[in-house]
Length: 167
Image (cartoon, rainbow, N blue to C red):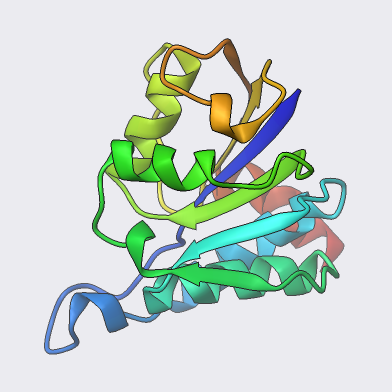
């Protein structure tokens, strides 16, 4: 059994003079990434794969810092502006010994990936986390036809009240 945590980057500043790859998170995006980090305190992925885009790296960094995780964020340019097939190839290359994996990136690819794996429509808003389990022995066996289940879908707004009570 493998568990895939799929985290869409938190809210970023709108397009402007900044190149898309370099867009930072908004203040709300930073708060949302931290909220998702609180959720990660009970979940311990063994590896983190992340797009190289600034907004994705910052989301991963903030979430992992709040989760008190010292995992290295492996940045992959291939997770920026790529398709579902490319994402699956990357996932299939993950070592078999890794049972829980976090991937941080962008829509529409992440939403399409989770939809395909879960075999049902899934909406991935900014900052959202989907948790998919796959009844496979090796990541190399992961395909769109693999027996997978969506076991959790969390949005930052769902955690807002809870995290505000903790502050």
